[in-house]
Amino acid sequence: MEKLLKRTTQVQKQAARRNRIRATKNASVDRRLLISQQKMVNQARKDLCNSAKQAQKEDWRLGPLAPRRDVGDKAETYGTVHFRMLQAVDKPLGKWKRWGIREGDRVCVIGEKERDKGKIGVVGELSEKAEKCKVRGINLVNVATPEYMKVAGQSEAPVQTTEAPIDLSSVRLVTPLADPTTGIRSDVIVNELKFTPAGQRYISNYVSPDTGELHYIPWPQKEKAEFKDNDVDTLRIDVEQVSWTPTLLRAPMPSGVIDELRNKYSKFRTRHEDSYIEMKQAIDERRKGKEQELEWGGGTPRQMLTPVQELNRARRMERMGVEEKNALTEAVLAGIGKMMVRKGKTLPPQEKDEEKVEIGAMAPETPTDARVEAQGP
Image (tube, rainbow, N blue to C red; front, side, top):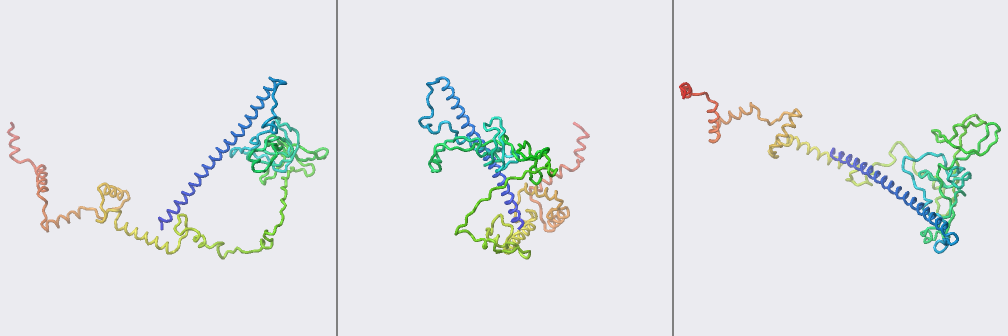
């Protein structure tokens, strides 16, 4: 059972690791897609600028003899903007700025390079990730209808007029404020907004003359969508009918339901049947009994160990402070020797000769050898 729990924990860790790797890969894919989109937009803008410069040079050089460019394939689309230039490219994650502008707010165009500078309009579309917005009736451009829209039948007109996106840094919020001296309300361009922890926006350097407190600017209300009733819609009385009542006496969903939906032997399963648990516990008990019988893998004749394995086992038991039960002590060796003498056991002839040689090497010098040394050469 311990092995099963260990496997489940390991599988959960592996799944979490795969999810992290997948998230990292998805982030890299999104980053590459963002770069490719930015390249396409930049290339479309570059091609349009180059073609305009080339046409301007030819018109200046040829004068009255300059060719007409609004003929042929460009008879209806000459002077239009490529549709890719209107695509808002998202900025990388972590570089977004909170501008405090939403759809429905009144804004004023203040960008120096904007042709509609000073005009006020309502934000129709907003992309916080790209930090772009489209203001209704402002920054209108003619766009050539893409071929895929013509094939799909979405639009038959060769040219469409639409709002081009404006960077949020080029617009400022417009709100009516009362003058502190006269009390007359008029539209004021807000250069900087502050936010409370609750998400309310206000102007830091303006105090309402009526209340003497900070003036909070309300967020625009979204238009409520109108829904029409159809014959296939579910009745309200059926939706509001209570079909289940929560209680503390039982779990919201029986644990057995999840186990039935999941495979019986799934790696991610954390609850098992009693019979399955008993079977795993019996296997664990047999394995532990076998380990005790083998005594660290070398105590019985059923398992043969190499000399290296025996050495490693001895070192391991020495580090653990466990005495080897089957080790041959001096008392055991003495008992073995007495038993051999009692049964008349003798050493093999080869071992006897080696023993005699060792005894002769260790024996003291004989008198004959001593006398020869005394006489000298």
